[in-house]
Length: 329
Image (cartoon, rainbow, N blue to C red; front, top):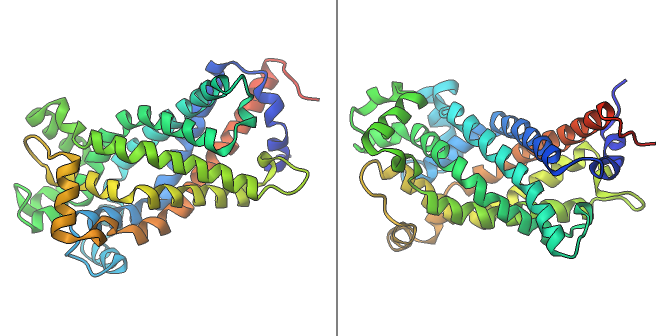
């Protein structure tokens, strides 16, 4: 019979002590991969709405209007789930690398803090670990995020006359678009927006992991550990972590999306140039355009991500210890 998540979590601290850094990294990598897949399928339609509203803020009255128009014009697969393949690539690569390096950075922070155990790190120390890990995941995220954003906003680009070939270009897929960019601009073309990605990811994941850990502590019943809060509370904590991330870094995400979608050729503008241009021409509100659907999307998506990650981590940890003879009494 399958054991409930509470029983699995209660053993995590003892299991973790029997594994090497390399094994932990593989487990974290796998958990991040499965978490990334889960979060994409839960949140992709509202992510599409977010990108459209960020890059073409005057075309839609609000998030619901954008959602309905996208569905009416292009349907589910080509509309609301546009860019799913690069989104999967982005989320799988980002979360696999992010959680892999998160575990490594946790060990580094624990060592710097006087040889602590990872499970005894406080929320601030976990938040710092998350920010450090985000530096590495940014390199995997930027190219796939650029392709995803271009595909999601392609109809709007064609409507505004910013896309050579017009609406016929809507037929192009992620691989064809990637090939075009590489041929025209080389490897630098797919790394447009890297600086903006750093400026978004590193502070974002500071708040992401910080809010997640604070929420876990607050939701831990008396006499139990934060690994024993159960599936539902794990989803809630993950959702709160995601909300913390997006509220903190949404202006940087708007700038990143503008750079990646609208800088279709040549040298992209700098983060500072685009940020100041939006402030001057559109005002502060434009930097938060699309925040509503993003918050609605991120709560279930990141909740599902953390549930998949934590559950995978615990099952694989138990499996490793079982086969290598490190049993917990």
